[in-house]
Image 1 (cartoon, rainbow, N blue to C red):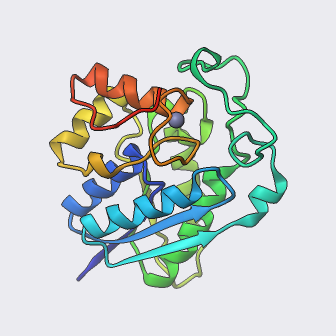
Image 2: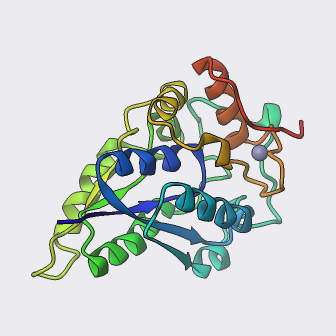
Length: 228
Ligand SMILES: [Zn+2]
């Protein structure tokens, strides 16, 4: 019987590697991307389409969640707020909530992806949550995954089998993630990480800085062209 995974994918390195791992595990891939007013949403959508095609996905759902944009409260969704760059970015443990935090984003995205999984009878939800992001964003922690999986048991219909969130990178930092990506032959060259959504990566936002440092510390050649 076909095993199905819904791959929650932003087009970045982590979710792309997680989807590649699900593919190796024999899942039929159904991609899910959400636009919630993030600056890079159009670039992300284009990127996810390429990745889904590359990995032979069966389907791709592009969800629109405009409420998060209306709500604001994040430098990613509110253009009046500045996205920190270069030395304004603290890549490791934060002392306060980063301005790029999007309120309850992973919970909201997973809720949408879970509904999709229930409708198509998917067994798994593939996510790129990881230990590097978890330093600043608690919705990347293993504990979040475990608790969400418990909630899912009561979130689907009585006669539906609840899907299980699988986060194969949850214990890993970026260099180990990139090594894993090379090992599973993930299409890292297709991925896009920048918060700004320009054609080329800026090279100095938090997401670009994590990406750059990850490749460097992994000793893997970085295929990315950076503006700065
Ligand atoms: Zn950037």
